[in-house]
Image (cartoon, rainbow, N blue to C red; front, side, top):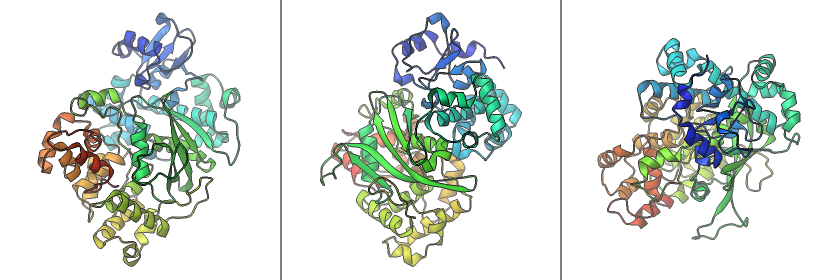
Amino acid sequence: MPITHAFTEALESDACYLAMKTHDARFDGSFFTAVTSTGIYCRPVCRVKLPRRENCRFFRHAAQAEAEGFRPCLRCRPELAPRAASWSTEDASRILALQAARLIDEPDAWAEEGPGAAQIAARLGVSDRHLRRIFEAQFGVSPLQYLQTRRLLAAKQLIADTRLPMTQVALASGFASVRRFNAAFVEHYGLNPSALRRAGGAEGGEGKAIEVRLGFRPPYDADAMLGFFARRALRGVEVASTADGKVPVKGSTPTYVRLARTLRVQQGGQTHAGWLQLRFDMEREQMLLSVSDSLAAVLPIVISRARAMLDLDAEPMAINAALHEAFPHGDGLRVPGTVDGFELAVRAVLGQQITVAAARTLGSRLVEAFGEPIATPIEGLDRLFPTPAALAAASGNALGQLGIVRQRQAALQAIAREVAAGKLALHAGADVPSTIAALQELPGIGAWTAQYIAMRALRWPDAFPAGDVALQKALGVTTARAASEASQAWRPWRGYAVLRAWHAPSPIASVASTAAEASFNNLTTAGVSA
């Protein structure tokens, strides 16, 4: 289906050209520029020579550019751009199309052969014919074309950044066979995969870390994000490093420069275990991701989880427009995510009504008792977080000896059993309302815990744990109802409002700044420690 100019007119082409001219990273991933004289499309941050205005066409999505016959730039690499926003307060058809795109963009939601239009339509409660109609009206391409572009860009990144055999590249990026992969690659990009690897493939070999760069939109408070994870790092699973590599002095406020952790990924009945390391390149508005060679086969999933963990796909202009007036000092804050939804749920339960330090101690004991050992080249990184099966099978006596009270034992094991049985999915592709409802049916899981899990594991930007006492103090209210009423103006970005309230340097309402700051760093009522 040809793309009509209506799609590009809505983008304000002159503004897009100016953003491209200034390499404005705030618009990275929000649109792509296709150059008719070269047949190539680029990100707005691309550093190639500025094309002439009359040779430029602008598209919201890479799939639209590819449907018009344009090939991705080998220099700026469109596959590294932040994803477009998938949450909206606009009309229902647009929301439905965006949610369908969100499911396609989320590798953890894919079946072994990837999501088909019928599967996505069933998930969203509409017919596949209706889904195709509204999807094409919104994006100018069919769901299948959108998915094909996503798969090809994932494959392109694997070819450029790894030495994986092409068979593994094809399977890891969602193609059912190497033949289909090769045919699609040649059709879209005009060269075979092996030629692309020879032109710019990564050097290295088995046993070496894979280096990937991932873009984000500024402003981004990297210090706040890395500090958040550093204060909650579990012994053996996570390691945060300062610039000098020294252990921070108690009571100091160190600046962390990198975060490393272990990771386990289940795909196609196989388990892949390894490690990843994250650090920021603020000058380029990029995150540098290092991944162990053992995770190369599931690199698209690892990349997606790393992006979610550090909230790299947030659109700060839209969020700040809604929140800046109430929280003028939080424009660079993002909502910390997770690379493992089950792990986040366990930590949320352990962190209920205790301090950050106490929750970290309980979590570290749990890892030591039930986590599997793993060899890594990073000092202090030597264990995987326990599996759902391991915690489901743990005895109450063994959990009790770690200092976990019976009520939380029941909650942990209930979550573990549901996840192990495949009845509960805790990732960004999960259905938010039904998952929240399922969580609250489990013993020991109330509204606060369910909302907190939705905010960080399900990546729901409108999650709002109204019962959190620290949040209520920061907002100057005393009840969950009052907090919820105060938050209505911040929809659909209330999850970001929560982080800003916890981190506010000055009172939001009638509370002293020290109360809000203490709430963010130490005082975890209902689980801020998680």
